[in-house]
Amino acid sequence: MIDIIEIDGASNALVDDIRQMIEEAKFLPTFGKFKVYIIDEVHMLWKSAFNALLKTLEEPPEHVKFILATTEIDKVPETIRSRAQRFDFQKISEKNIIDRLNFVIDAEKITADSGAIELIAKLSRGGMRDALTLLEQFSVDKHLSLEFLQNTFSMIDDDFMDEIIEILASKNHEKFAEMIEKIKTQHIRSENFFEQIILRLLRILRYVWS
Image (cartoon, rainbow, N blue to C red; front, top):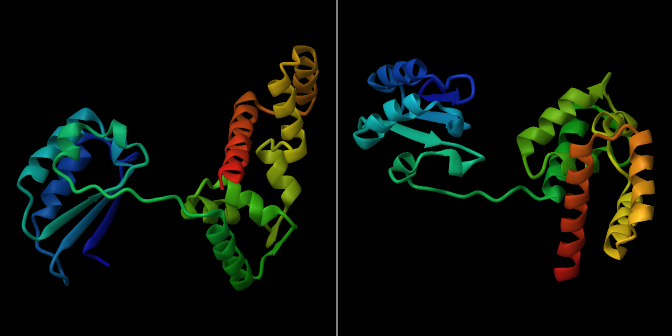
């Protein structure tokens, strides 16, 4: 709709970008009662841009509503947060993401290897948009390859991760050094390694506590 305007905070982070938005906001909506501005990843705005936005948030036009979306609320200045009504959204469950991905796959006539959809659901970390983006990026010739995904993201097998966790728990430094050398031969990036270990531990803890 013409009265709903979405702005990417990452690519429109300068004060001039916000000033232009504020000038355009002065015009009345074309069809609806309100003009709605959605600023995605608002934490990416520069300090000067936040200052320019603050003046408008203090006295917004009656016909304008602002929706500020962010994944890093701590980076949004308190002066901005104090003038907004805050809603915290929970991440989407892996099951719901898988269900939606299967719906899209059926509609688009995409074939997928066993386990590929589940892996995308894990990689998306509760973000439906990220899951759909991954599906689009990795559906080569209408096929989603599990091996292609695993190689791209340097995924570690769950059994291998469990073995590493057991070694860490037993404080077997010699065996752990051997495992590290094995990981190096698989060209797994260190940041991916630690991230996957942490996610695996969280899944184990959730299972224990449930």
